[in-house]
Image (cartoon, rainbow, N blue to C red; front, side, top):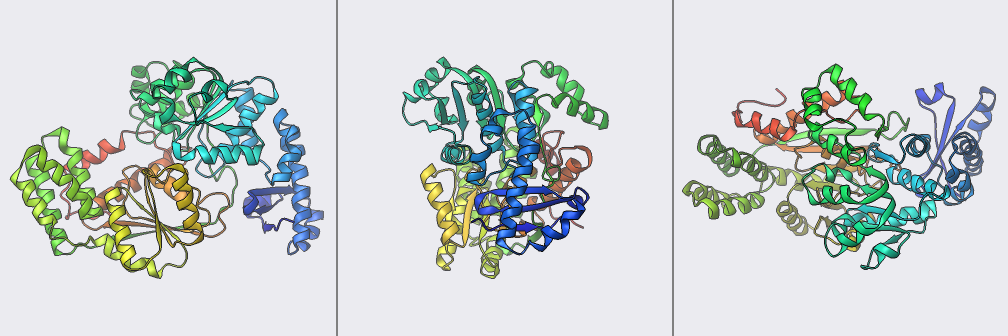
Length: 555
């Protein structure tokens, strides 16, 4: 018998007279509209497993009637009993998403719910609905290689779909519903075979990877013969409006006009243009925030810590900053590379030395040679010292995100020296090794050292601590990292620690990230997205004129 936890109503739920019961292990969460007369009876039962079980069943019945029966969706009516058996009752926002995509959007949509709101379930239900209506014979699901196994499990176990992962060159023609790596599908000899098939439905997960219309992946997806296309991503735009324009072009070519017209209308967003772009996006994009879904997740506690450089580290950083400001300021092609070098140095001297040595081989500059010499003197970065002191004090498991593989490997060596159990998680691992690493972290290890590429698609509700050892350029990446933990099924408050090296580029980036996040909240109803200029270019322009060390981000 399931063991349910009763979530007592918050203020908004009280207004709607709603009680919620959930079992995270079964991924089950059910809500019950109650009358005032029934309040005392239900609350009296809240401390008994049997009472909560009855509450959940009664809730499921009401949800089935309200959301499944009245939705007009054949799949939900047919799946009612199956969903109850597997412990899954779709949320109202998921049901509404399926209805809109199938009945209003003709299967052409960007599914952009916030991280952790069940976009995979939404896409699977849409697929199932087309099956039940007799409108689908061939479907293709394209994902990052690391997520094919996860998609297969979710669609099989939660929705009872007979799906298969692509393994041989013959699967493209012979499989009914196929899950495959986008990277594999876009390359020959697979590409030609995939493009020959008439697909009724194509689903692309982590679709923000298609933001650049010049990439092979983008061109490949655009050339697919497909009746319906779903693009699934929590971050449909990460840097600029053009990325969003490119995604809409895939599902509805020409609907936003030409790129030139689009850029002219929305290039410098103000309140009027933001309202206009929201209206223009509504026919193509569905986004639900946690707030809109009325999900009462545990709170997240965010702290920042500035780490002070020692003398050797500061000497190297100062020399590098002077080289950037006086030597190559005018060389636009190298400005971003050099600023990235500053970030690498704040991460670990080992990451920075790799770039410095490469740069030295390219230009044979004696100043770069001097920088390499100074780098050999630095034994450990300020952030590393703080992290190693902090980890033994943290109760429970910890996810540490770094931007650089060299830093990850250095940190792994330092943790090993100190007897702190850990696993590494990065883009070099195969799907099976990623699953093994995740399970080892869940069962035994204290620390998961993850890179940006490795953290994609991770579900870590069993962990409540995340340390952003390196800050990303893009605030949406920061939100995605936190969303790996702060999502459906999380029962404890999530503790977030952002590390930065004081009086360096990292402190200024943190300031700019805050400015952008405030802008998202103030002017854009999607809560965490920005419709503005390219963040990277903005940062570069600011930093090239910044006298680092004289300006503090939080003065």
